[in-house]
Length: 129
Image (tube, rainbow, N blue to C red):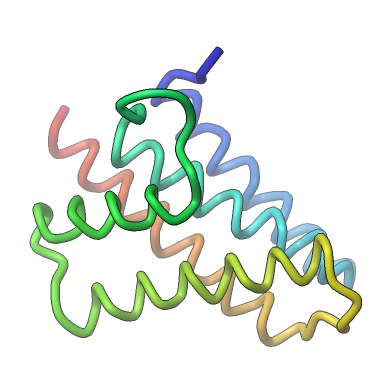
């Protein structure tokens, strides 16, 4: 059963808060994972439900790029967001499945991006009403 869009937005906020707490406690790998899932939930909130099944990470990012264009987010700003999402996903995969250490600075970047994307999504959803 898929979550409603308001529920996904709530989850995005919850994942972000968890990422911040984990980061402040020096728990970088779980913080990286929560930051990415905040981004994922924010993107789902912006894009809506998939045509069928569940969103896959790559197809959700692709659909989110279309939403950004529709919202007038283009050029350098859009590239920074979309590249940041790809970096956060890679960081999350390394944190969850890899053995390399996760750097604080990388996690701070992912958390900052998650804050930025959540604020952008909330702004545009509030405009839509």
